[in-house]
Image (cartoon, rainbow over the protein chains, first blue to last red):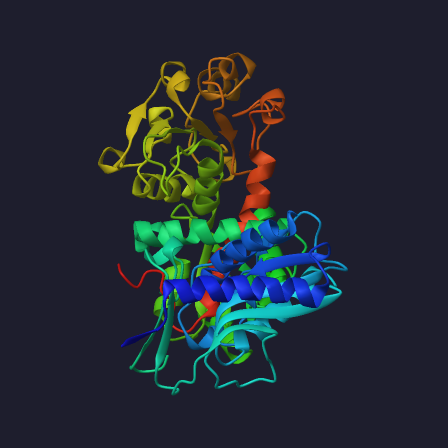
Length: 178
Length: 316
């Protein structure tokens, strides 16, 4: 077990991602941030705070629970649902930034794209991710990456955030892959 | 757990999980994501051997919002009216590949018989059996009470709830007593002695024969329908006397606590157990109970059918 990212590195990565989002989209005026619960939602609100302070704006932030859109529902026991909170203005015509903690198979993001399609028609959808650990099973890539961490399939990558886990840290451990 | 047959099969955690899931389902229904792909390709049969408006439509709406295929079939217009047995009906449903059967039956225990038999492999959901139980109604009532009255936290601790009227014939009352007690609420049954079931003194409830003395302390008043179709004896002298002692009218409503609510599982006998002005008043959440019913039933279907082996009931 080793810390792949420290608290300070996570904070730097989020600051850089925030700048990259602003650079690529030419400002914050058309942005809507959607975090995928649980940890993606916390990352989204952190990135929103950083963007707001850089651009002195108030960027809309929401959460998007994709559980009901998953393709592996039948393979595990049903899980509790998390809140989906779409900002008042909706997502039609917006540049939507999806935010999650770890990008692995890409199936979560596929489900999120399906869910977005039910809600509206964004101008564009971009993906920001704290850790890209490889092993994609679908043609999906991230636009903004905190850190690429090469892993074996059998390893576990765990993102700890102070909101849910007491401290900020990314840990790679050996173990049975789920 | 594969089936939802009785509230007594649920642990407190199971019940809270269903109610929490229903909150998210309600949010999904209110928002732009009305149709969810979760149960696509699953077949759900509504087997209603007894009449129903709300429960049947509500289960159908819930299943359709989760993209399941729904087959409705009632006693009238099917071979049930020709005397086909429950077993043969179940074998037919199995042969057609039903993933779940939602059953309402006039015989208490019919859903348990269906679930325990080897007649079919799908889930069985009890939508009201005789005078036994009606678990999905109790869950939607608890959901409604939690939304309006709960003092924070997942359960209903500290709330006082009155269930008034024909408890003897009411499966809604039986399920509600079990569930509300499980969630920590304090339940008082208010009814004439003739309309209380045998053995009621062993239930986790208080019993009162005097509506007016209990009413001012209640957070929610649940009025029950007087089930005349199940009454072969004389249980009270006449309807006017029943209304005077156990009906909810405007004068009684004025005695209620501020922010307390009036509930009724429907269908109502307006003028008998509840007057029209109370049923249509601001305190009445009777119509809202119906829309909450769809969210709660979506949660039940999701938790029973969406996953591999279900986790509700696993720890009981």
